[in-house]
Structure formats: structure tokens, C-alpha cells
Image 1 (tube, rainbow, N blue to C red):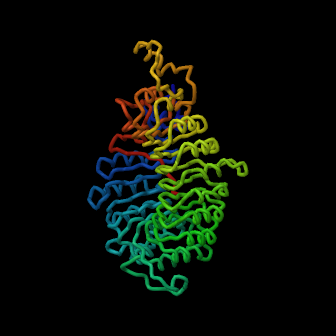
Image 2: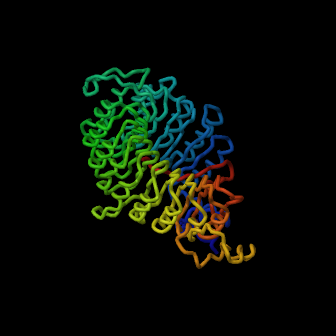
Length: 542
């Protein structure tokens, strides 16, 4: 009877199911398969399409389903790649909103033919596509540029990361075709900086045909200041003077800024940025090795609307820098991984303060914080609240079963938990049992078969003394890699039932684990009839 329902109705019904159940439902019949694929499309996924002749029929099928987010892999200048690009333009182009060609080597002609067939494109990723910029003539013809500008007037997001041959001229030709641009990435491009007063001047300079200059970028930012909302200049070697010149552009109101691995930036430069751009909601300062506690204090006091903050690999950051984090009432994501001097004491005090609103944190990453101890984590966990979905404590080697049981008690809404290389974790911590006595048992031992029956995962022990991993009903990803004291006992019990939505589980390197595989653990991928197409969740930046 279900097969007689209209496809639209089946799609609507299946859209309420979690991803794992949708994939199971797709095995019922062809009608259910089509409905499940349509429902999957509605969850905002991007399809990775390998560029080969085997993908042509799959591209046609994706076009019939209206897929709007794709990534093309193994793209080169071969006739087969040209044929695939033609097929994408014809079948997917009219409704394509996001296109990723990252790392590919398309020819200029095939690239232009493709984008001219995508009139509603909003996101274009050309990172690593050096073949398009080697000649320096891309969109140099005014007629061609005019056609692209007309076709892609609605493009909002442009990724030009890792382009070694990008120059002022080619950047100007390309960016000039996208008048509505709001987000730009030039991460790890070779920017040249000429110190001097010209940065602040409005005198036009000749665009360089051989290099990408900061002066040219600054001119672009000044022209687009009223619309530009996000910049990624990670790995460009941005000096403090350049950041100051960028931040003081009249009319510029950035919401997202990524400066990952800009190692010359100083704490004073960050403090100035916070005064110039107080509306920032996402800031990435990871790997800016010269930054100290002063930078974090300036961020906490100056960016009141910040939602995402990344401070990975700041080796000079200490607990003192966390003192004012409580002022960031809208903070949702905090990444302080590899901040080796952060013990978590001040962070725990800030989160547990009765003088601030309940935390809105959904993601907390403290991986490789070697100074992190049980005491500070136990003070922090109860204050994190039910909003926390992602917790990464990988390689915090001093953490023990006390932390594990606190997580199972207070953070029952977690969807991602990473505890790799936490070598002190043991079976009894995951099972919620009392710590076993080290003294030998004097009472008679139960036969092995009776003991196994008592610990049957289908009949959980009603005498369990504490919270176990089974309390994390929403868990989708669990990483216990190299937790060498864990054995089959805890993993088998915890994987026998519950966690219907689990997608990824890793226990590589656990001690005495001979086999571990959950039937419901499913990688986020699917195989089409012709060619392997892998849908992956679309992740926002920052």
C-alpha cells in the first residue's frame, strides 16, 4: 500500500526520519529509494562526484532530483572531464547553487562553459585550481567577462584559496564578474606587502600582472565594503599594519574573519581589530603564535556578539586569558585545542559563575591540552548544560574515569564525543560501575558461562551503580582511539543496543579488543547505480 502513495507524500514522510533510517528505508523498493533520496536532498547535503564517464548517468539522475550542491573530484583537462562538465551544466546547472572544483585542473574553456550554465550559483570553490590562472588570461576578454557577470550576478561566496598563480589582474577580472560577493577566501595565497603610507591612500595603482598585492586587495575591500561580510586571509603572513589598514576601511562591517597561521600578528593588533570591527560573530586566530592572554582578553571585552572563536595552537595562552570569556554571552563554539598552558581552571570558573546567563555553547574543543586535569573538567561539565553537542578532549592524557562518568551524567545530549588517547579510561568508567577493588576476591568465583550470561548486552544489569555511556542516546560519533585500557567488555555492552543514530565509532588501538563493529554505524555515503556519489553534510565556515 505504501508503494501506491505519491512520491511527494513518501518524501515528506521519510524526511522526518534520521539519516540512518532513511538509508534503511531506501532498500524497501525503487519508489522508497527515490523518496529517500529526495528526502536526503532536503537535508542540505553536497554530493561528491568523481569525474569519469561512469558518472554520466548518475549526474542525469541527480538532475532529475534537483540536487543543488555538488563537488567534482579528479577533474583535469581530459576529454572525459570536458564531457562530465558539459553533463553537469546541462542536467544540474539550471538549479545548481553550490559548486566545488577544489584541487581540479579544468581548462579555461570547459570552466567558462560550465559556469555560464549555472545561473543561480551562490557558492563557487576554485581553491587549488591553478590551471585556470597559469596563463593570466581568464576572463580577460570584456565580452566573456560581461556574459559571466550577467550569468553569475547572484554569486555570494568565492573561494580562491591555495592559488599560487593568482595575480592582481586575474583577481580583478574574476571578482569584477561577481558584484554581489559577500564572502571571499584567499587563504594560503601568496600576498605581497609593501610597507608604507600607500595602504591608506585612495590613489589608484597599476594592478600587477605577476603578483597578488595587499594594496590591490585593500582597494577591492574599499569598493565592496558595504556588502563584504566574510574574509579568510589564513596563511598569508598578514602583518599587524595590514590588519589595522583592513579593519579601518570606511563602511566595512565584517561578521567573519579567519587569520589562521598569520604568525606575525601581535596582541596589540588583535585588540585594535576588536575596536574597529566590533560586529564580528566568527573569529579564527588559530596558529597565530605571537598572541598572548592580552589578545583573548581584548576579544572577550570587545566582541560582544561573537559566536565562534578558534584559538588552536596558541602556545602562550594561559588560564588568565580566559578570565573574561563569560562576557561572550552569545558564544556557541570555542576551540582551544593544543593550548598547552591552559589547565581549564579559569574556564571552569567562568562557565560555572552564577553571575552569567546559562551558556549557549554547542561545541567545545580542548584536545591536546596536556595541562587539563579531572578537577577542572569536573567543575566545568555541569555548567555546560544541555546545549552542548560536540566535546573533544582527545589526548588530554591525565583525564580518568571520573571525567567519563561526569560526561555521561550531565552531557546526555552530546552527538560527538572524542576521547582518543585518553589512556586512563577503563571499562568500569564506561559501564557506570564501581571501581573494582584491587584486593583478590575471597568468595567463590562464578562459572564463566554464568558470568557471560549476567552481562548479556540484551539484558543490562539492573544493579549498575552509576551513569554509563548508554545514557548518551543522541551520540552519533564516538572516538576512543588508543584508549589502551579498554577491552571487549565495555565496548560490547555499550554497542549491543541503543544509539540508533550512531554514524561513526572508532576504537582503534584499544587494549584487548578483538572485534568491534556496530551494525547501525554508517558512514555518510551512498552508491548510485552508475558511479560512486558520496553525499556529505554541508558545514558552515568558522
